[in-house]
Image (tube, rainbow, N blue to C red; front, side, top):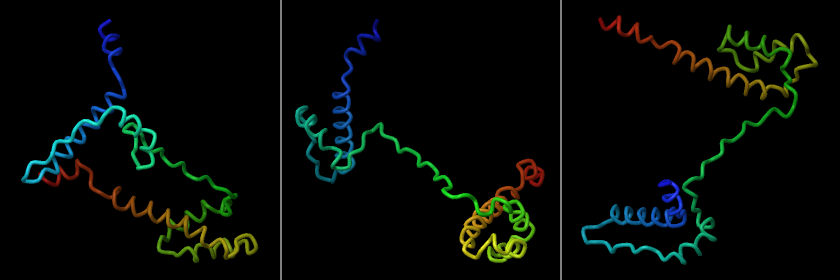
Length: 154
């Protein structure tokens, strides 16, 4: 019953106005110079409500707004390396210093017409991801465990 009474007294427009007023007061306090700054007066309710129609033009964002995560763009064309991706990855893992050009030459030797030089950029993007994963593994997977660090400290 008491909660219903509190709920009936809630006014979202008034609450938003009070929050804005409190924010203005905080800004005024933070910007205070050695001389006392004028106190910001509470805006009139009519002025506040009329400003809601054009607030979006000034770049105002609702306090409850959250950025929506961008969806990852899916592949638009079939993967040109679908048949040899596992072998390319294995060759890369064996010799990670090889360039994308050198990796592309292997399937080109086996299937000359299937993998033209135009696919080099596609393979370069893929190798870039593989290199990033390998570097991440080298940095973070090779770190000593907590137990090893404690043992070394003793």
